[in-house]
Image 1 (spheres, rainbow, N blue to C red):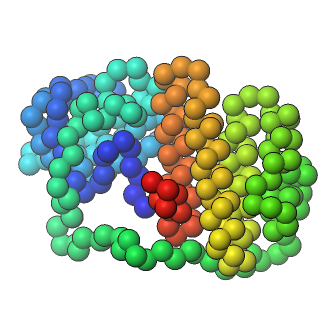
Image 2 (cartoon, one colour):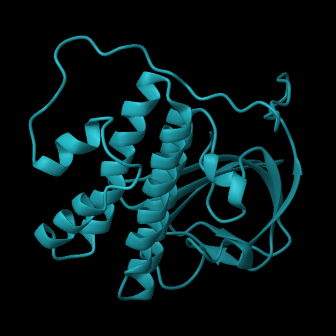
Image 3 (cartoon, helix red, strand yellow):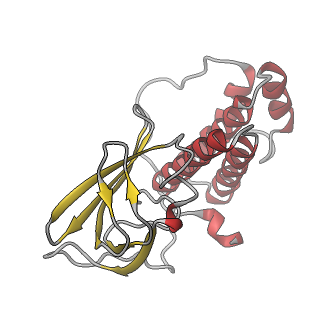
Length: 224
């Protein structure tokens, strides 16, 4: 799955709605058009990176995640209008088939299982117990008295998803996926400022996209 930020999608036409200037000083004016060929998040620089193919050449734009004005997560529609799908010349459009929903079952891991770590971590990797591990959730929140506790719970359920996924037990893997996604939404919702909220929301979206790639499809689309 390609990276998505707000409404932006790779290989789609874009039109600049408002004049903008990126972190390197590159300016695009309202009305300029091109095709979005690159869209990524640099976790080291904490930047959204956008590459637009224009008639006069490509332009690479960089926007800090913590920016308080200009193009940024949650505000891309104010600056970019998305148009038609434009595949790379010479390639065939690849569109997912909505009817095809197949969980990826990874190959068995070589070597002994990893049983080290706190009690809640071992329980997460076990296939015992109910879908929702409420006692483990409470334990993590007691031990992590900060917003990162919600992210730890999300990772716990991601680990549980992988355990059921490896065993080929799709209904329980789906349940764990959904709980992981829910807790990352909780994590992002606990931001205390607008800038932090945008950064955590992007982290949530990247976490979700990574889970979808790993799982094979997005089980949360059932409830959208």
